[in-house]
Length: 107
Image (cartoon, rainbow, N blue to C red; front, side):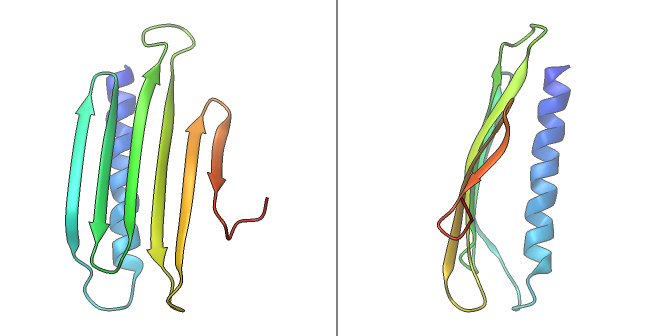
């Protein structure tokens, strides 16, 4: 069951990647680098796009096979805004919810 959830999480993450790439009206954006590894106890992926967008993410299954099984995800995403400034969000998503951090985000 956790394999299915993990696969769905990876598929969802890839859908976000495609949505981000297709939402940019600044011409063609190409994937310059992409790495992915999916295992029984977690996953990780990273990519870099030609428009300066980068993302890394790693998910680890905690308490596998137990009633309190969960996934802990850490990652980072950076992009270049239309004004030329680069923004970065580092995040954790786990049993405590989604916890983003970035210099441009309110605390």
